[in-house]
Image (cartoon, rainbow, N blue to C red; front, top):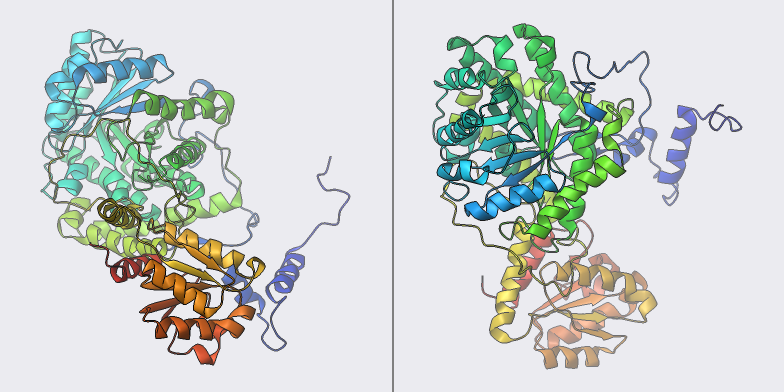
Length: 615
């Protein structure tokens, strides 16, 4: 059977012709775009330079290889049971009794692995054995991580495994990642003891001593290319240090776990996991590591950076997409952060929801039944190639700077991340990167969560700054909420809708949605004469008024409405649309314009200032 066999086979020329037809549909004669210009407008570029073309086809003579074969782009192993992944939950509650029960809930509810964060504001090293007291060591993997004291965390886990008395059966990770800690603390990393940790872990054949955690870089704003580059450069730094301490590449490669992030942008996430395996396999090839260990074992964790505090239920969708992308990308283990992570320590319910997202993907959607389901999708193959090539170039630049440790200490890593983070911040502010429930479609009656446990105060860190994408908008809403708590009413902007609803409806919705991103109220007056608009503004004490309507109505009414408002002493008048739509008579009367692609954060910040809302 030939799919679509009854239809003529389209060619690239056919598609090009349709592109030109659509792109020039409303352009006047003599101003048409050519094909190159049209394709450029249809091509998007990520903050770190990844490009996405409008159409992908199979390149001539290109093959994609097979899963479980070098260079492992399509997956490092094809013999995992059912090709599934390990569901691993993160635990960081300092209360040992609560953590012990949460671990039992997770394992009894479908989880397969336990991950403890051992820090001053999380699980104590002294409590590791207690929280794991009812875990059957050979039935569930156990991993630890730490920022403040990785040695104490690692020793506590080693003691637990030793006490279990079944060294050949236990599995997990000791979490030794000095560069990851250095990225957060700003302190110099100590790699001298890596060999001792590897030798200690070798007593437990199914365990790994070292972790390469890229989450600090993701939370600082790094893009997909940099995350892969930093992972590879860090792993190479560890292998080099181990070689100096008497551990050869064959042993070193089997002792490293890569902890990567999974965002709600599914395709770059899929491609990033595939590219990391490819590059790490290349490093292993050069260092003559065993082929079976070259494929970069990865634990994917849904990105903290993309989680929002406001409308936290949307985080369930972000987590589901991240888990999907990680599974399709071939992660061996996946951790989904609960939707209430920003508020505090997760509840029993939020942990169950996070766990069930993975169970649904694995058991009902059967995502783990197929190896590399994205393989052969030329968009994904292109992204994989782009990330691999550009990340390898970045690795080379880091090596030229003396290696990852030297580049981190010299500030080179921070500078690279800052450039990408600045571009992302610009796109967040203009909503070219939308945040559902935060910058786009926020809830008018947003109610904060109350069912959560506050997190203990975290020790201050002097390394790479850690930020979430939504914080800038959350700060605006906090500012509005504080003002409302003092005055008893939300700060408001009068929305003067000119003409009938069929003329102003679309821009009214756009503008009200924009104002709601800062939690502002928008009392309205519809289809009114200038005098009535002025009366409403005076009644409300409005310092900011926005006109909303169509270009047709603006040409007839905008200048008069703006003039009346200015004469009445309203200091700031804006127009939903473009200033030119109001005509020359409105020049000097309308202070700014509101349109898709504007800097929403700057406008809302200035609006709160004009309303007298305290910072």
